[in-house]
Length: 248
Image 1 (cartoon, one colour):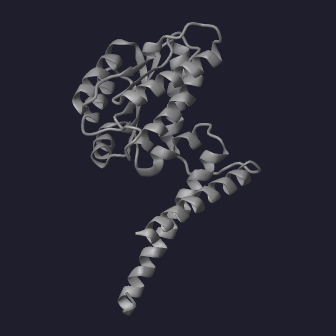
Image 2: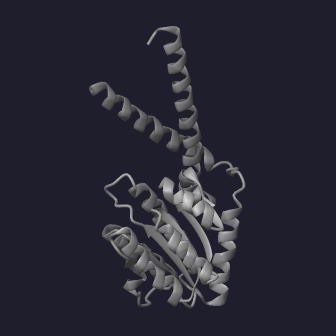
Image 3: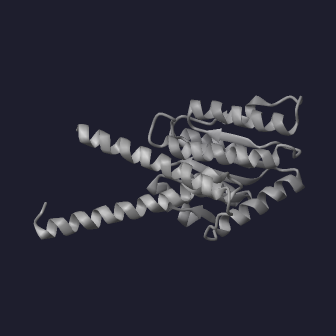
């Protein structure tokens, strides 16, 4: 067990070193990403939000910070900050919903920070970051009125969802709202792939910030993901070869 812990610690140090080194290199050259049309359509939808005086809605799912699903919620919070910077000066500031109390508080803080940066001295509406519900379907029930009744023209679903995501995609279709959706949950990914116009699959969830004005560290994280993926493939193939050769 000690060796397992040391190996895990070594992987963390290796990953951190790679990210820092690659982020330094990224400062000297522009990153090249594969084309993901969903992000281009998201930027167009955000532009229409500002032009039309409508509202952007970001739903962060139900992942708690102390659970493995917290990574998806943090990715959603990063996108919330980026999009809030673009839309906070519009007639109707963005609204965020979530299914975890800690994420709701962080969404309020994120929106407030962005709002005060764009419009210093103006009063911030703390209800822009909302706890919609703590169970899957109470969360969906609390989110649906936001999509139907608050002049929302673009919705971003980014976080940990279950099959209740189908209710949210249906609401977006009924209200003719642009929808970009991403989740770390496999059943939710299946639902979103079938029902959302723009769905992100797999690690595309964690690439969102790099594609939308993120810093060098975000760009470096994509390269690190690829490196770790190939290293894992190499380890699996080497293990299989050693097993066939009788060494394991």
